Structures are given as structure tokens and as C-alpha cells.
Image 1 (cartoon, helix red, strand yellow):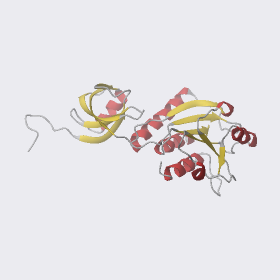
Image 2: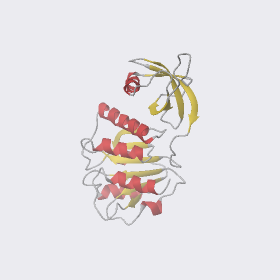
Image 3: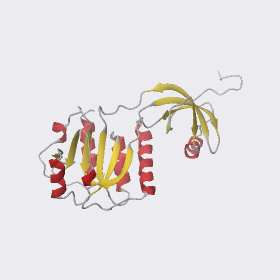
Image 4: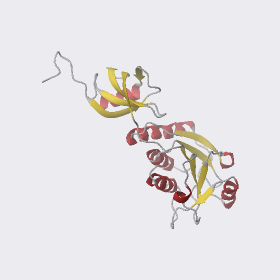
Length: 241
């Protein structure tokens, strides 16, 4: 039997979009409205919305045209599980699209924020506002793909000496004896820090260790700068948190 009376039965999709806040009525901008059109969604269809801060819910399309959409809020749903405390990745500036690759993988692996760093051997000393916005968009898209209700914040670069942290900090350092799985303690926030191509200087590592950081191994091989953070985050994810 059809829906009857000329009304189309609501279709539930696995589409997810980010909104500023979960409110009874939500206006969606042109970019997401175009995405809904591309997916051939229509008024009455149900999708999921999340606010990037951990809240997620179903929403029904009330209005949809080329430049905007209006959604009505439905039932709350559980997003993907997050770590017991926030997980921060501090990473040295890298060349080209390498940072995009790192931000994408880090989002999928559960980080809550990405802090960009300027180090002695960093490939760059700064990045423009446009690239920072692009990295934030990469994090948002990766959140959608990985079904997280949290979108990591990508923070502008700061000098390594200015980096402050709460809880534990693990510094990737080839040749170290420490293993992150043995040292990891989720009684407080967790931070990991990786350097640029060429690595951190001895002085930089010593300064971090003096401030309470732990040096940890990346295994027997030397990893590329864009691989190191993914390797450490993968080890944390494999621990089951």
C-alpha cells in the first residue's frame, strides 16, 4: 500500500550534516542544501544532524530549495563513542597536502583537537587563514564520514615553546624505549606530539621532557612526518578506548 492522500512516506537516509546547534527548527546553508539536492533528498526525508560538540539527532526536511533547507528536530541518537578524556594531536607544520591527510586520519581516529606547531625544522613558519579554514573543513567532512558527533578544532600554529597541555603528553621520538600503550592512562586528557620531516631537535625534545612529557617509540623504522601521528593514534585506538 502507498502512503495515500498524495503524501510521500518519509525516507530515512544515512546522510549526516553539521549544524550550529540542535534546535527545534534549523536553517541549512547553500553548501549543505546543494549536497542534499545531489543526494536526491526531498521534503519529508529524515537524516541526521550533529553539532560538532557531541550531540546528534534525527531531523526531517521541512523545506528544500537550491540555496537553503529547513529541518525540524527529531529524536536524539547516540554518536560514535569518544575517548574518556579529550585527545589532542600537536603536529609540526608540514608541506603541501600532508596536513590535510593528517587531520583527516586524526579525526577518524578520535582526536578532539589538532594544535599546529612551529618547530625548528618545520616545513613552514605559518599558514594562511584560507588553509586553516580548509583544514577545519577536512575535519568536518571526516567527522561525517566516520560518524562522529564531535568535529575536532584545528588551532592556528604556535611556537613549540608556547605549547601547554593538561594530563599526559607523549612525544614521538625514534630510538626511545617508552611504549605508548604501557604508559597511557585515561585518568586525564591525553596529548601526542609529532615533529616535522627531520624530526624535533635534541633541545626541543629535552625541553618537553623537562616539562613532564614522555618520549615514546614509533617502532624499529623511521616513519615519515605524516605517518608518525597516524601510527601513534592507531596504537591508542587499538587499545580500545
